Length: 131
Image 1 (tube, rainbow, N blue to C red):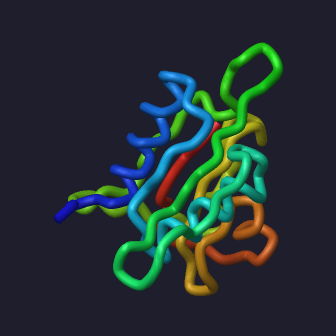
Image 2: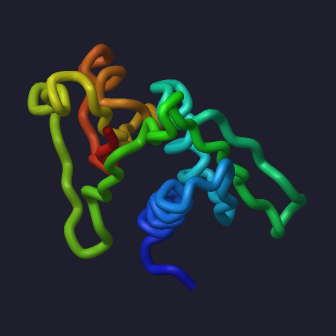
């Protein structure tokens, strides 16, 4: 059993990028799927799909690379951990790296990017920072 499944997913993605794999598989959860949807909407990954049935589902994540071989994701950082939860109100969600990065926020209206949370004027738990 994993203590922090989101951190495990980010580590798998970082490791796959480091060795230039085109795809990585991650054990399925609805929260991971929501985080990957935000990554896909922001153009950080090439896409993903749910593979398998019932209890054997996995997420197949297609990684995205630029023409010169660099990944579109240079940094993935877990903000909230099981031992230290980080919450942020809508007014405190400032753009990350002058708008070049994205924060994934878990709100009462679902998991969304910090940009979307600012538009809807809602805050929540900051899960991931990526750029």
